[in-house]
Image 1 (cartoon, rainbow, N blue to C red):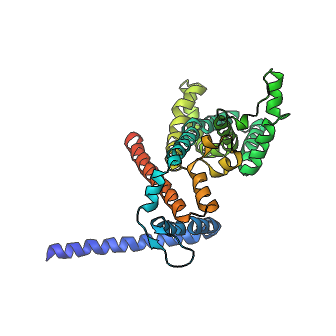
Image 2 (image 1 turned 60 degrees about the horizontal axis):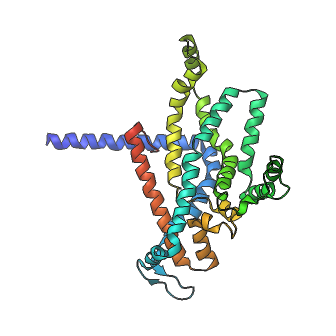
Length: 318
């Protein structure tokens, strides 16, 4: 009887504690209600276009019909997907372009944030900051137009090549040059914006740490390696984990605006394939199967990367 009463006491305390915690949570939400209200449009966007869209993934297992009931076909469209000759070339292109963007470009925003921090709050540093952020707010249609103009005959790139004695060649139709161009345009667009999270982490470091390091005789390089970089490990791992989940998405908007018939075999990725067979060829079930395959691979990679991060650094994205 004593054990039962003790258990009831513990359960009662637990329920009471949860009740108090719920009250405190709702009070905190009410206190910051205007911040949550501003967050509401973003939440609605993700719910309508991301969460509710998950229910439509079942179309991958059905033979879609505009009129009449959809017929369950099981793994039919997945077998068709894996047996398509062009599919594995598309996967190779997707992984190649995504890996270059993920791993080759990953250090540049970190280095750019370190550079901005070294420039400090001077006028020149602020100008560099603003200029670097601007391309992020341009659509890929505008960015592609700028780059196509730069690489066209008489453009700034071809003019520089002419001064250097290099014969004119449209690099945008070159299979060997198109992927470096995609990489460079992605870096130009994102380096400033992606550096914000790292710069914010750097600015959050207490000035007392720098003063203490200076008293101990540490130079600027020692401060960067022993104070700044350890602070950046957590945001770097979080960004890396989240980006790994998008490794099967190499950038639909960018590829659509930069691709042409001459380089399509090099830049045809999974997203453009889904766009083609789903919206152009109206094979909705087939396109949904390809999209579901991409989503599952991305989810698995996020879980694996998060587990590896926890093993190596003791922390992950959650």
